[in-house]
Length: 348
Image (cartoon, rainbow, N blue to C red; front, side, top):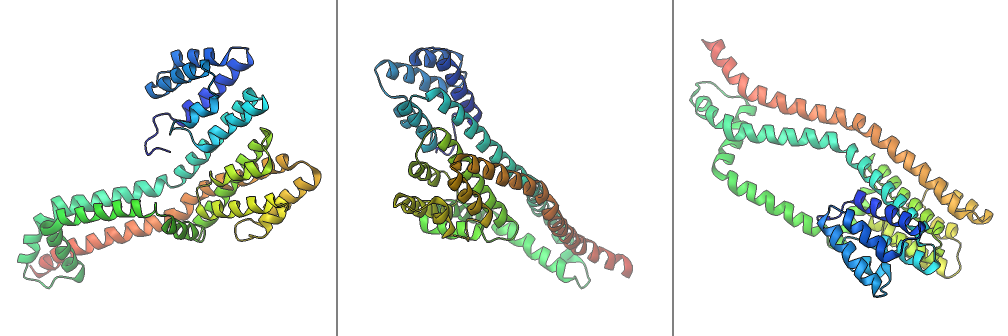
């Protein structure tokens, strides 16, 4: 996926649902693309739809058109390809719309869970930076001229102010380089594996991350089964859609085991650190009763509800930590600035 998406998720949802409606109404696929192109206000989407109209008139399969665009991932293409091959393109487009919308809602829930701490930390950084640049340099001369023994907090503050005043630009540049290096470092597969493993072991966040991955797996697998894809192909697509490499690797192993005739429940049971007992039990029940799709739908709702519940409770867990952090920060500044002034006034 591109770093900056030119076609938003909601636009993709509207596209597949409108396309499904037009196909059901009997509109030829090329005319459907042409009509949607006229209605689109997004230049990138309009260009894609015009190209799709031209290529479908030439007999190009629809999935190939979307496959050529970096805006659409393997899941999107697989849904359409399965619909074309099975003759149920309109139904698969509805399933695809449901998947995109659920995935979008999940991302919003995860993002909202970290919004509060992001705001607090950003505010603290801005406040600290503003004091370091505009306020503290003005106080440095005053403090250094005071004929009193300064407390440790004031000494630390003066040292920090002098460092920022003399080397601030270099420090900011170094931090920018470190941030950029970290961004590219996590793209390295071996590093990403280590980080992903740690992300599943961090208290509170580890459980949330695991439930988020299981929600993606069960939601997508359930919808792909409904669209008519076989188990092995479904698992292959799901392995490319999870965001944690630990689950991606595990699903590759599960796919291989299923391909050799092992039941899905038995294959995931071999990795209990990633798949909890409830996941294994429901999958096994679905396999034995011939209703695996329904079992996965149940799991998607179950883990989706748990993710929602945890994201709502997360600010309650984080808030005390942030309050302690802000309190210590304010106490440090108060001690460093007020104590010397208090000592002077007491002496007078």
